[in-house]
Image (cartoon, rainbow, N blue to C red; front, side):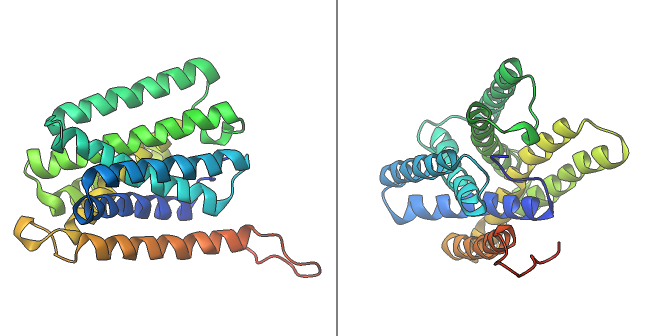
Length: 248
């Protein structure tokens, strides 16, 4: 396997990474020149992805660093389309959704599987990361669509997507949904859910947030991810000679 196995820890860190991407992006584009922020985000994303691809196997710190960088740059890219180009959130949501559907279609045509358990080759991993990037951009636009265009606000969007992400979980557990379809549906929904949580906690009270600050929330999410990834790395490390590995 070249990517992470699906587990409780996977979903927790994935959710935190989406929130981190939103908070960090919103903080950086205000703290420094937006053009510099986007370019720096792209360079960091490309470097992290190159490290992940070069390893040829799943390594917790490399994999999750790539996910975090995809989250930050993907958020910036989605926001630029609206803020700089003036594209409405509905249009950008549909556009990114079409891109994601195109990635899935091409992946299926070439590899005949969309299962993450089958990501064992370099080409399949490229498709995987293309889909991940598209889910981040799509989720960012959809989260802004519900919060701003549909006037649900940040708290309302959190409740909406928290309920929505339960649907594929219930469908897989009790309604015998296809596991691949259930996984990718949940994966897409983690993005608007995490972004809505980040906006709700970080934005000022004047716009419906709690006012804790984007920078502080980005740091908090990053620290939580670092602790969890360090734990995964420790558990994945081979035990010293004569010492048994800790049980799951």
